[in-house]
Image (cartoon, rainbow, N blue to C red):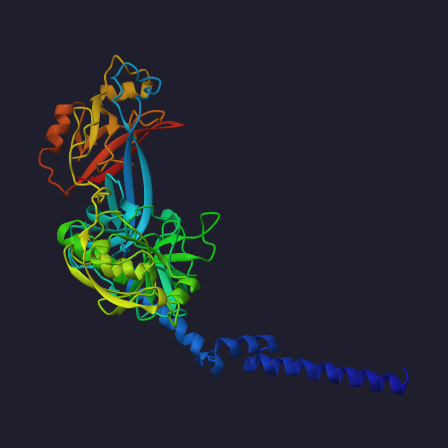
Length: 520
């Protein structure tokens, strides 16, 4: 081996030894690897996030939206409505033909919507079309409590309704001023779009327009339309929910959408809260709305109308015809067809909706001062004594009070809202049910009342299920006969929780479950 080779070997050995000593030294002091040091640096960085100066306004707006949503959501409610339609008798499922005759049962149509609480003792504002014609209305709060609601009154002409639940200490909303709301203001829509899957949804947008008329939405002759348009996402189920400004004040009741598909397409409409508040006050006071009329049919002004009347601005509404033609209060007072109405009681009129509201919520018999401009610029102020709106289109008030249903077959237990038939040995073909008979029997649920607490909780014989439920026990007491059921429920008071032991049919045979209901 040459001297040069030995020198290289010595040099390599020294390098290797130095590397080994370096590793040992690093290990002894637990120095982190480069990757570990980077991760540790990130994890240990607890300095607050720095907002870009130009993003501060957006951050503040987002915080405002969150605060408004947190404040208003507890006062928003989910509303379920049920309407009954009578149908012909249905055949009993196989295996039960010999038990009893299937009673006549109504078909139940269900709907849902939104509303918001306006008083701590349970008054709720919503849309007329959410509760119209309902036999039963149920309200669910944000905290998942449920209440049966009574319809206080409805006004189809404005699509406003008031319902009430029996409780106190509820969170409420603050009602704002829709008139002072400006186009372009930010708003939030809160409600329950598309049913139970999306309850208490919050969407944001702006006020897109005001004073909108929606052709075909309300066919009533005395309908008042003055909608706030918004691009906040509104879908079926949002109806009756609040449209809220960034101060947390309700400025409208979400009521309609304009869409070829029936779902959100960028155009939502809300009833101004000023209009709704006026209707609500009358509904709570009397249960109905007294509306006054001038007896005129009006339309928006055109440039030609303004030119004919020598008006400097195209503002006001035009009298088309009198209604009724021969006995109109306006005609008797001296108003003429073609007159441009520019003010009522000194308040300017710029739209059809404004005149409808200024006159409609006056009292019949009251005199209003109507300012008109005629051909050539002739101006007059004419006193008109208002008449009561004809009653040919009566106010619709849903009757969902607790009451016995005429279609229910006897005997119907009102505590649970069910009819039952005893399970009998002669009719039992299933081996599992024969064992039930040997153990004391049970009660077949023959019918469930849509008004009762068992509705949608128990399966009955007339609703198309393969087999109806069978009640074995009530509050732990065996119930093989109607008399035993009555004794088991004898001490139950309204509002008490009743525990049922129930057999129900599955693909694998009969199974047992516990059902708890709140007694009527």
